[in-house]
Figure 1 (cartoon, rainbow, N blue to C red):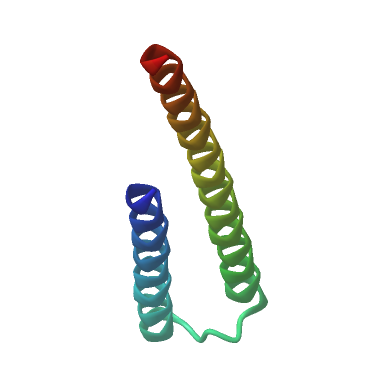
Figure 2: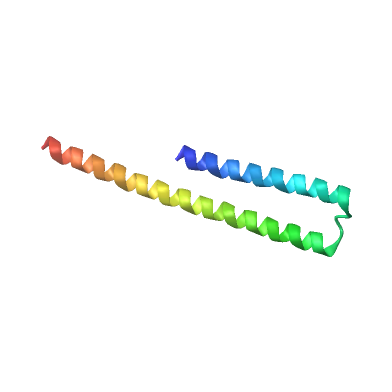
Length: 82
């Protein structure tokens, strides 16, 4: 569980750093106010948000699967004691 949370945070941090780096590069090369640049940054922002949602969905599925396996293991252990 902690691993997936860590991966989610890592992806968000990396994406944020990439966006900041690209913004910095764009500021030095041409003005940020250009419609093309703003549209591109907006698309990137939507893509990063979509990735974060998908990673969270995957981690939720992993938590569910882990709980099922844990419950199954506990129930088989309880049946073995009888």
